[in-house]
Image (spheres, rainbow, N blue to C red):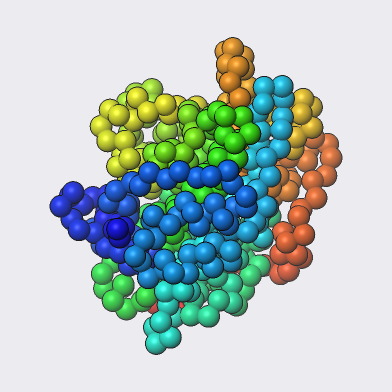
Length: 433
């Protein structure tokens, strides 16, 4: 049976589109986000390697699509990345390290898979496609790395000037070639708003071939689900128990991936969202009301989001009040608490965490203080060496970057300034043609 995809803003009568069309478009024509018209039940055997788990888990979503015949090849090309689980503490807790890809962040999984899919879908006669991406730190580098020198594609990155780490900013501007990097005089929310305006600009889309690689893209969401499916299936095979997850999140894409695995029958019990001082998600669960707002800058900058794009998918997956009965919680962590948790995690476990992972570790520590004896799986989203100006002074030791990151940091880096106005982005896009 074929799988179809419709907008989060469409009615149940909408027949949707096939997978290739959803991946290529990025954002639905009505401004909504693509979601499957139905959720399959997926049972996994004890896992071997991630690429095999991914092929098995993704198969129902690729059924009868243009890409179904090459799904195994796509998984092998994009998803054969290390996925270690590091034990901490005395309760069976583990840190799921998602940052061992080429740009040292969890977003390598989704970006590499999306790039492989779009390359497989591309026809030789098509014009060059522009991948338009807003980033709060790590997405842009992962997308740049995935599409760098890939024939038929170029990337335009927007990032908030002064609101990403120095190494993140250098990384974004170090690729060159078909990667175009712009630093925006504003926040990540401004960058995200400008990207959404571009996708809703019909005259621009008639002129430029653009698609998204942000977490709004279905091609990011689906592969990110595979590492949760793999890790939790492995833990179930080892312990016979479903996993409890604590996930650092800002734009909700990574967390939605875990929720999707659970909704398809994966062995996941509770899910806790760890936010920084941007409280939109914790407030949602305490007030039972979603209120987007302006973001504020924090040490965990990749989560500096005040109006998460993926909230539409959250509302689709859990309509009405069902969200508040779904075994999902959210907690906010301040910058002072991030600093203290980085120090304490190193002192207690010998574990070096980035500021985002520290948010999740702080939430775990709070649960222990409240008497929680369950074991938890913590998502570690970025390598701490990307935040050396935060981490190193706290630990009074150096944190060496992994080889791929070190190689990028040794290259020259260039980005262009741009106003936080849609007209400036539109001019930059048309200038590329």
